[in-house]
Length: 209
Image (tube, rainbow, N blue to C red; front, side, top):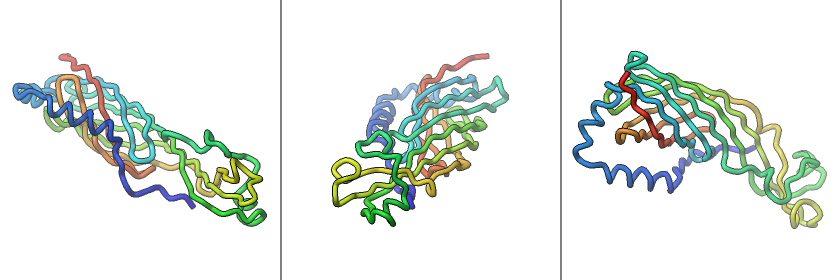
């Protein structure tokens, strides 16, 4: 049965972007950062992942004084790739056939996740807002086998779906939104299905009303 890895791997490119942004912030920006979330309502949209299993995603938020310090958050994420797109994937073989009828050797498993989440945001300070929420996650499990005769799949290697490791899940998430500059907001958090670390980078528009 496929198991989601407990090891969290943040995409290197996102780490580099965050490091560069933080290193380039001028000293005089500190006052602006402190005042930001408390004085201005913020609307933002950006790139968000749930590492290591969902590396494609988009998120958005709206919160601030206009809503008495409260707000909303929403995102949609999916895995970067699916075995359906790999050479040798077949719909004509079941797990029982691969193992019991053909006796093919099991190689590895992989899961493809899609999810949509919503949450509530609360401003804590001028530079920090926290969020919590829930969502719907769909998991598709896959298993890879090797046919020594080479008759099935691509040179004997093939992927099939694993219904026993597929299905819907309720995803719980929480974390924080950090104001790095006037228009840049960083996100860090955790999620339960799939289990991982949430990392996001947003362009935000502050409003004085």
